[in-house]
Image 1 (cartoon, rainbow, N blue to C red):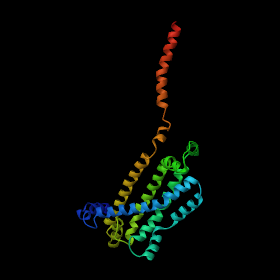
Image 2: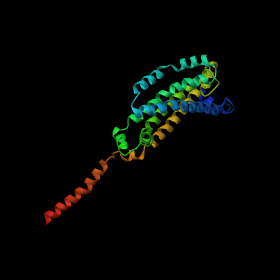
Image 3: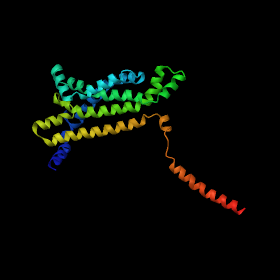
Image 4: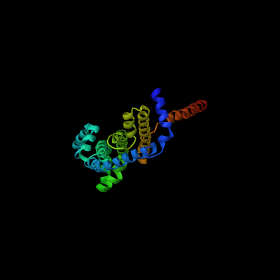
Length: 251
């Protein structure tokens, strides 16, 4: 309860909402850093994933590479890159880009692999070129899984971007390291709460986007629940049948 009251007091202090070290500034820095990291990681992973998913070649290499990237400890990689390029945002940018590539890559090629091959064969049969198949068939159908990969990468980057404050005065993670240094647990927990809330908001946004990008033809082709309709049909038909039987017997 003491830590909770300290956290609420820190979050409610107006002094923490203004200035270069205020919450809005730190939040904007965190979001910008996350966005730039995802754009660069996507520029690397998405084309490779599309080629793998479209041609079916190199999947084993991609899976092994993505698994190796996932196994790299982010803090260790961050420290090594920082020793190489020095203090600043370059080291966390490289480390988090490496972290973001595997889920985006997986979402890109699994989105294409999940498409029924009969659909691709039908597209070729009507004379579509490989580029047309890629852009007009595979991309729309595989987009939900690609968004899912971006969604996973975003949450990982948002959570791990707090490590950027380990070597730079940047982002929401600064509250965690600064609070740890001066043993201000209200500041530490307040920074953690801000990161959690940001992750939840972004999760909701990506969940909505992932739902909206599903092609209308796919949603229109999904089977609907016909149990209610069947029961209503029986409810309507049974009295009619009984009435018809009565009329027949009466005749």
